[in-house]
Amino acid sequence: MSELNEAWTLGLAEAEARARAKGRADIAEYLALRSSNDLTRSIAGDWLLQMFANAAGEANRAGAAIQISRDDAHRFKVDNASMVGSRLSLGKGVRMLRVAAGWPRTPRDGVIRGGGLACGHITHVGIKPADEELRLIVDGNGRPSWIVILKDGRQVEARELQEADIKHHLAILLGD
Image 1 (cartoon, one colour):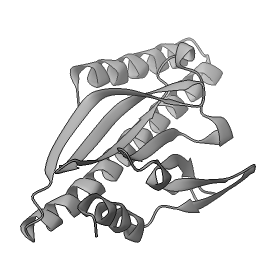
Image 2 (cartoon, one colour):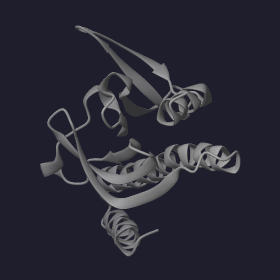
Image 3 (cartoon, rainbow, N blue to C red):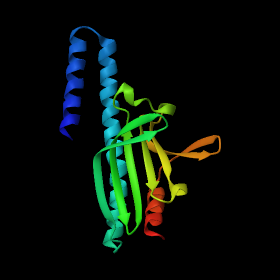
């Protein structure tokens, strides 16, 4: 965890304790929810990037020679909102696959439409039709999952990101 994330987590915990001590259960509950959501976002974002890194590592063991890099101070746009998070870059020759995950950190960054906790992008540089937008949701049982947002004209539907999707994106990177 970065120093900034540690300071943020500590600051939220202190604010929650102060709110409870002053009898402000409403504020304490909000801060507890915020802390829980931030933990879910962080773990889910790391999981997403790690799944792609693991798939690239597996391909490299088979001789693919994919170059892997990570940027933990990445900002990207989704609609009018700014997401702050991490980006994994996978390169093979002139092809580049970028996977980003993040969420708005301040009110100025905006909000995620559709009730998601975080957003993600899977971007194939130069192959725009292969790009996908992701949203982190929590289902009725409290299970977080990344869903792929499909855009077909005005119709928007969603499906859960699967391991097969990750392998598909890696196959595009490798030119298979």
